[in-house]
Length: 300
Image (cartoon, rainbow, N blue to C red; front, side):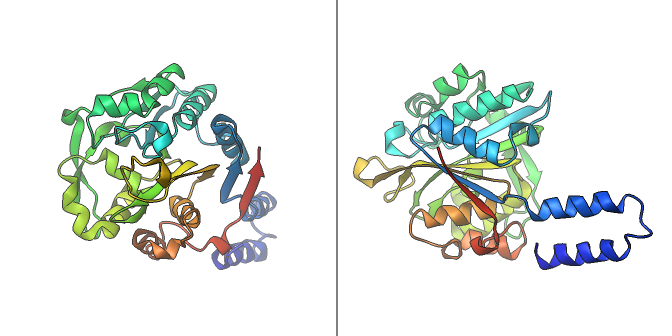
C-alpha cells in the first residue's frame, strides 16, 4: 500500500462509524493493496505461458466482457519469420484471441500499420494465419480510416490515428521485446506507432516525448509483452539469428509503464535507462520503479 492508498484507508477508517457500507469499502481497499501489478511467466509453450499470465492477472473475464469488440495490437511490421524476433509471436496472439472469445467477445480485430509490404509482413510473421484460425478478423490498414485526433500531448497536439482502435470497447497491446536503434528498446508504448497515420518519421526528433503522448491517449486494457524470443541487436527489423535470444517468457500487466520497465531488465537495463519510460513515470502514466510493484513469477 503506497502513501496515497494509506491516507485514503486512514480517512475511511476514521469515518467508519458514520459511513454506510464502510466495511465493504475497507475490504475493497485492502484487496486493492494486495493486487498483482505484473505477472512474469516462463515455460516452453507460448500458448500455455500466455494463458497462465492472463489467469494470474485475474483471468480474461476481468478484462473482457460479453459483447465486447476487442482490438489486439501485435507488432507485425516486418517481413520476417517468427524465429527472427522482429514481430510478436503468433502463438501468443492466437491464444489471446481465443481467450477473448471464450470471455464472450463479439469480435476480435487484429491489424498493424506495417513498415515493410503489408501482405508479406502478415504472412511471414505467422500472425495472420494464427489469428484467423483462432477466429479473429485480420485486416490490412485502410488509409481512409485514419482520423485526425486531438491528442493534447506535450509534443503531439494532434495526429491521425486509426479509428478502429479508438472505437473498440477493449484494447490489448501485445508487443515483442526487442532492441531499437533510436529508442534503445521497443516494447509496449512504442508499439502504438503501428496505429499512427501520416509520416511517422516526423516524431523521431522528439521520440521519447511523442511515445508518452501516444501512450497517455491510448490506454490499453491489458499489455502482454512477448519475450518468447527477444531481439538483442540490430532492431527493430533484425534478420540475423545470432541477435535472437530465446527466453520463453511472457510478461502481463495493466500498467504499460511497469511492463516496459520490467522488460528493460531482459536486456540488462533498467526502466530509467529508457527516456520514454522516465517521462511516463514522471507524468504519472504508470510506475517505473520495479521495487514498488507486486510481481508474481510462475514457471509452467
